[in-house]
Length: 637
Image (cartoon, rainbow, N blue to C red; front, side, top):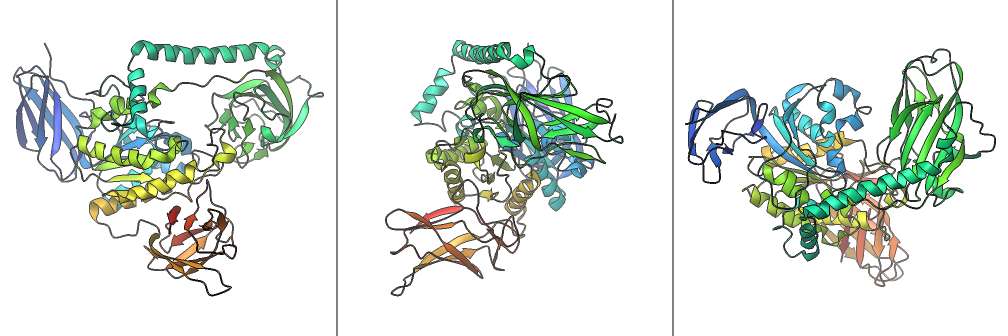
């Protein structure tokens, strides 16, 4: 016999949506009457033949902790405590939405220390792909409030969004975090949303075979274990313990760290390579605990200080931030050894990162000359088949069970994994937004998203598309998605890091999203967007003179200004296309709310214009007086 049961989302510490009829549901024996009591009101419903009951609570104003009582006519009863009323946002996407506060704690130590706020809460859903049918209930998750004990697991983007929005409104903010690194947009869409995408649906059908998926997962594990096992078996460094202090580097080659393997004799190298150097420790630092930062390394590494392992990372993206325990460093000479495995021939110690041993008082720079020796050479590792990235998987397993929960809107940070095939991204985005709103039964739900930031993928990522146009193409399609009603885009072309797929400045990303939310929900008049194109005019040239292209901007009432990473940098990212299809760099001059472009090399009338249509910008970016950047764009005349 079934007993009264609630879904995971309806649990202690939850935040319910303000100023909307609140959907409450659960499960029980068919035919049983269920009574829901909340804020002095009682709601009676009957469990259907499918074992589900539901009711809608009256609209509520924002408020502090409340308790909900639920009982049935069989004598079963339960209580949900510590309930707040506020705004609830579904936060979805890939790694830059998933990236936790743990990864940015060194950038924002004050925010971590002072984060305690019971009015900000998150519900983190663990990765789960499902191909058979949309789940009706989540397999994981619980509500947690922002405090030092939990904050490191919050999505950094989502937390800073919530913190900023709460500071502006004083209204509690709930975050339902359904995100997964590497996921494509198709994985967050239902089969209905993907109607007509035959290949995507065929893939979903293929992975609905449990035996096939089991074989894929076994093959993933097997080929990984075999590759590492074979390499380790060949590795002379492991056999001869090159991590030990008494190893001689007399016959080893030298290289300056940081560096790209492709710029040295290690070009296209696949296998194991050991790096080693010594460094001097002062009397004051000796014996003390310290930190070791080694930027990022492609692909995996194991690090030893004075022969003792102090860190290990399995893949390329996480920053190498290791702890050196008390008593390991000694006065005078110390050794550091890094055992690196390269899986695909694109090894590197990422330039522009911090390489150092340090504590609060001293820092030892580890950049410069290192010795290195190849441990073993191996063939390229076979690619992993990431099952949960496949079409419909994450919608079915993580999002669908949330559709019954009443929310304020959506936050979306995704697109990196679709830059290889950007052509359909706008249509997929439209379908996703339309489908989500339909399944949440509210066509007006705000959909706020982050445009892809600057990132020199062609330099720093071996998975870059061959044309080098994937990232700018997706950015342009994201800009065009603003045509969809009730959407808002946070431009981030100035908030990325050219050498990192996962930029750390999530605070400004969250702030820009929060300002958009405040405008959508509360009608806040504060400027929250950058300059946008009102119209473009082409002035015909006089004989012997070049054409001029004048871009008239809105959201720029106070005028425009240009600002670059370096003082005095000029605008270099406008291009004009001639009638033959060739793109040429254009001079840009700001005149109030207008941008005037010219290019002496174009003889005829320009056919198109683009701005920042590259992986990253070369020069100064254009802002309005409120400090919001202009979106990259591409427009034909």
